[in-house]
Amino acid sequence: MSMKVFEFVILKHPTQEEAKNGVASKMIGGVTTVLAKDESGAAMLAGRAIPEEELPFIDRLEVAVRPF
Image (cartoon, rainbow, N blue to C red; front, side):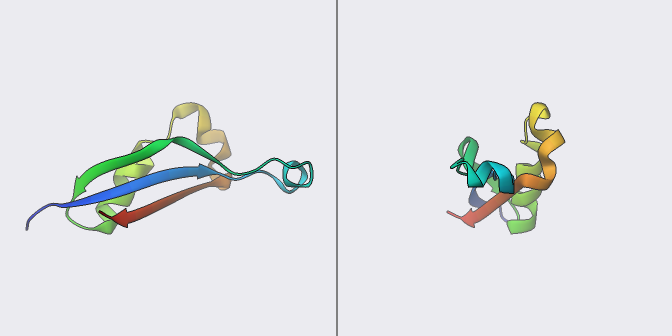
């Protein structure tokens, strides 16, 4: 099976209290390009790219993956 190009971004969303105070979602890192067999493989690579210091906030993180 051939590899395909995907892009992903990791978003950190504010808590409800932070959102009330005007804090917006922010990108962790930037848009990253990877090679994977499919979208789930790209999502797995994105999950591995989450910085260790952000792991305590895993319930507030979102990984967005799209084909290139």
